[in-house]
Amino acid sequence: MLIPHPLLGLRDAQEFAYHGDAALMNRPDPNAETAEADFCDYVFLRDNLAGVHRELWFHEQGDRSWLVVTRNTVTHEILSAELATDVKYRGAK
Image 1: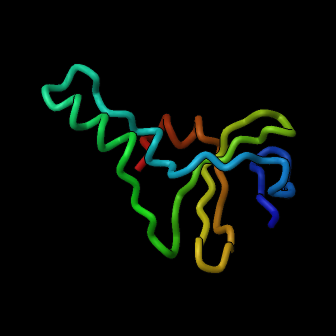
Image 2: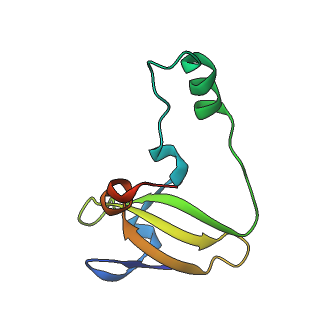
C-alpha cells in the first residue's frame, strides 16, 4: 500500500506506524464536569466501521511527521493524506 505523503510524495506504508482513529486528536476537556466519563469513552470506546475512515499514521522511518489518512477500510484505497498539524489547526472532525 502506498501513502501519498503531502511533502514527500508516494511512500510505502511500511515506513509508517498506524495509530488509530484520527478522532483521537480531539481529546476531552479535563476540566469538564463529565471529564471522567468523557475520558473513559475516549480511551476505551472505538467505532470500527467498514468503509471510509480517517486514521492517524506516523512516518516512523521517514521525516517523523504525523498524517491524517482518509482510507477505505474495505478496499484499502487511500483517498487522501494530510499533515496532522494542518488538520488540527483547522479543526479535526
